[in-house]
Amino acid sequence: MPVVLGYWGLRGYGEPSRLLLRYTEADWEDAVIPLTQEGMDHWFKEKKYNLGLDFPNLPYVIDGDIKLTQSVAVLRYLGRKFGLAPSEADMGRADVFEQVISDLRVGFNKMCYSSPDKYEGLKTEFLEKLPKKLEEIANFIGDGPYAVGEKLTYVDFLALEYLDVIATFTPDHFKSGSIPDYIQRMKDLPALKKFYESEDCTHKSYYINGPMATWNGNPKKE
Ligand SMILES: N[C@@H](CCC(=O)N[C@@H](CS)C(=O)NCC(=O)O)C(=O)O
Image 1 (cartoon, rainbow, N blue to C red):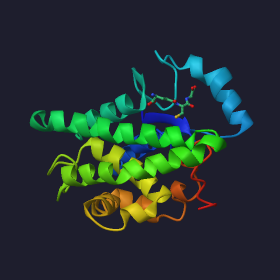
Image 2: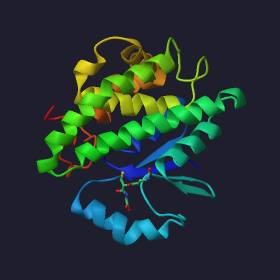
Image 3: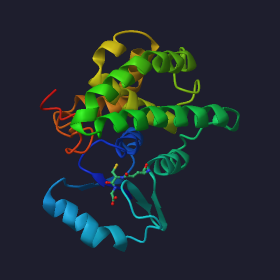
Image 4: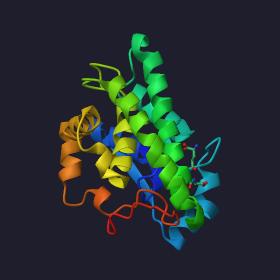
């Protein structure tokens, strides 16, 4: 039975797990819930409470009897399953990095999902604080090649996606240095390269955030 990953037809909080699964080339099902009225009704009225999830939400992963939600818990589970967990010695640094990248995305989303009247103020604040945060992340990654050193781990898929999203929002902050090198190194991993370069790469059509967000990353508008 393939691993099933359920999430909306957008990048959002589900994409790091999708990237990890694409990297493994495992047998997995991308259970996409379309962003249509029908898709949303189907999720909220029929599916959400009938999958046996303890805390019904999106994204979810179902792997046989294992049924999990919470995007980072899902990603960690997949990391352990596919040999992408950090070593015991690197676990502390991986945990810190995971939280740093998650905080960055939460702050970014607060701005993106703010009402249009608050958006510009929050954007100015976000962009003012960003260089320091990126400098710390760049120093942490250093020459890598991966976030916690030689071994590729699940936190790299979180960082790849969330840094790439912020680079889409503000490309000027990602012109050179160890972060763009790191993003490119990840994108060049064979299975990921195939995905990013494919004709039907979902990043060419998927919104980054929900369409209702003030900044939703609609690729057709970028
Ligand atoms: N902390 C949760 C947040 C999950 C969440 O907010 N999911 C949103 C999309 S990003 C959703 O639409 N969930 C579907 C629902 O509420 O049924 C996580 O990281 O997974």
